[in-house]
Amino acid sequence: MTTPALNLDPKSTALVLIDLQYGIVSMTVQPQSSQEVVARGKKLAQAFRAAKMPVVLVTVGTSADGKDGLAPTLDTPPAPAGGAKPDNWSSVVAELEPQDSDIKIMKRQWGAFYGTDLELQLRRRGIKTIVLAGISTNVGVESTARDAFERGFDQVFVTDAMASPSAEAHAITQKVTFPRMGRSRTTDEVLQSLSK
Image 1 (cartoon, rainbow, N blue to C red):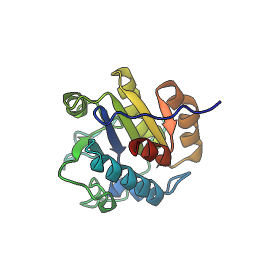
Image 2 (image 1 turned 120 degrees about the vertical axis):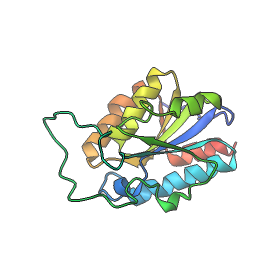
Image 3 (image 1 turned 135 degrees about the vertical axis):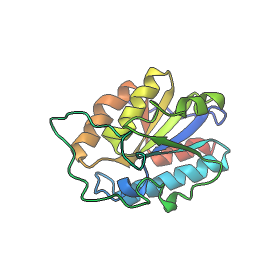
Image 4 (image 1 turned 90 degrees about the vertical axis):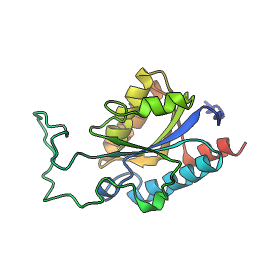
């Protein structure tokens, strides 16, 4: 089956990059490396900015005392952090060349909608479609995608501009979850759609 051509309306489409920050990009991820994900995210951000389309840079973090972080009882707790996080843990990586025109969203959990003004920022700009990428596929990106789906946004998942600590988890999200919530395309396919 042939994949339909991607036609993105520049007036109603935004790029949303999830957790491309120092503390997350430092992880080992698959099937693309963090460096590859960031490089593709940069290409996408440059193209969206050139087309005067919104770029949303989402990061995750907590307040200084950590009291606003999630702390439920889990069967599989996260590995110990190994000391204090560096000051730049929640900062967007410099390689993305953040601009003053970018929308910055700080979240306190996996998804980027709950407890933030992401939806307000998108709706007030007339955004109907979001192009999603980042780390990690099955956590921050998928959680944001599920919330976006329930809010009625069209979505495009940039398959080669996201990755996870587990190649298996990345593949399951790509194969099982994303096709039920939107369209999956490569970085090149998204860039081609913007050049029309």
